[in-house]
Image: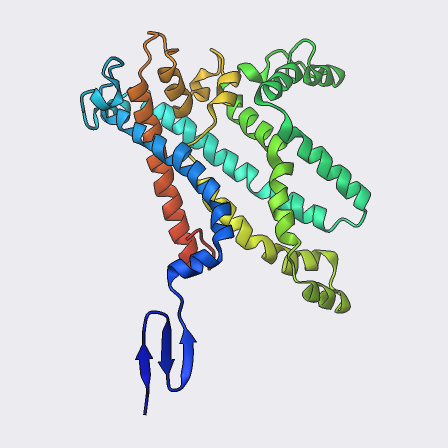
Length: 326
């Protein structure tokens, strides 16, 4: 015979007493944790979610005297105008080319570097390599572009002097060649950020199963075998998460570095959607007219594509593997 008596906090079933606390009581017992998380949540709401109300400017013909709320609604006219723009596909292709190239170059190198650092026996050499690879991350974009400009200077640059020593004629700097722009942008970024990007992989490698490693050593596994069968599988989930997040930034190329590397000779491959949007917003496109509404529509266009990409890649990852963002 079952006896089942139920009230708000207690359930008695076959002589067993199970205490069920309400949600509010559970929250009150852990109020310290909720206080700690309250400040970050409030910050995100105020500075991330509330400004999203300004996105409506992308669907309006913005008039400064009427403000965002009072400007007339024009629907998707700005989006249609952007897609119908004669150079839309050129900017779109430049953006995709640089983003995919950067992803293919920058994603595997930190993994390889982290695996290599993890198997180093000499701690002093390991720390030296870590420091040398981390340092470029703290160089500002302006300084980085200045270094590239001086390095490839055809008269006094280091690259010019090396070519002169080898007897190779060097007259045209890659900074003035449209075909060289994607390579300069991508590989300078790889050099600057590869050390910083290894930190998360080194943290993941620190959680490798010690017992498995010791068993492999007892069985006579070589360093490469331990790297292949223990270290690499350990960082695969982390690598998948990073890859998914990188796909969510395909259309979001930082305009600062692109603008600094741009000139009249390489503009054909150096103009991307983000720089075009920036120039529209600050009135540097030639007519001097600042189109905040049109610029916002272009940025929203990028964000929608990024959202679709990250959702799609995350769905594929959840089907293929057990790792996904949600």
